[in-house]
Length: 148
Image 1 (tube, helix red, strand yellow):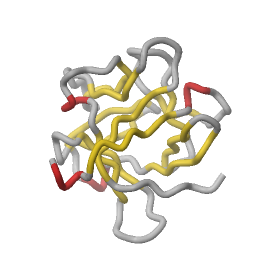
Image 2 (cartoon, rainbow, N blue to C red):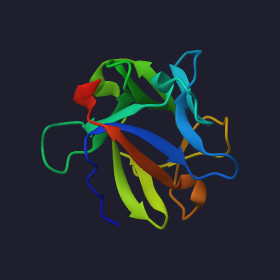
Image 3 (cartoon, rainbow, N blue to C red):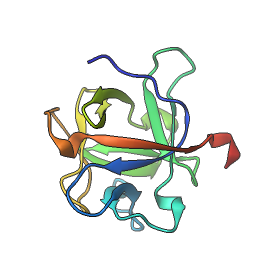
């Protein structure tokens, strides 16, 4: 399917996994490649669960980068097919596109790999895309990112 445009702004990203509602969450403790990104229950502290989605470049059809709303320099990076958030130069952030699928969207890396949530608490992975609900996401628009 062709990529779909996403309105730039602050989002909560809901995982489609079995159990209570789960959101993409930055963990509190960084390791070698940054803080692992997992799915977890709705947390009252938005600082780890609100993400800015914005075009990587100011041109139509550009892929998107995703960063923590509370930390302008902390963007999503992929290392060894795992997702981390890290304060590295913006050029090192992973780039993503979004495709419409039944029940939500699929988030794809610039290498065509799908973001996957195995279960609540597991670190997110990028995998070859399959029609699985663990690779389906709901983007909940919260507000424009210039209102931080």
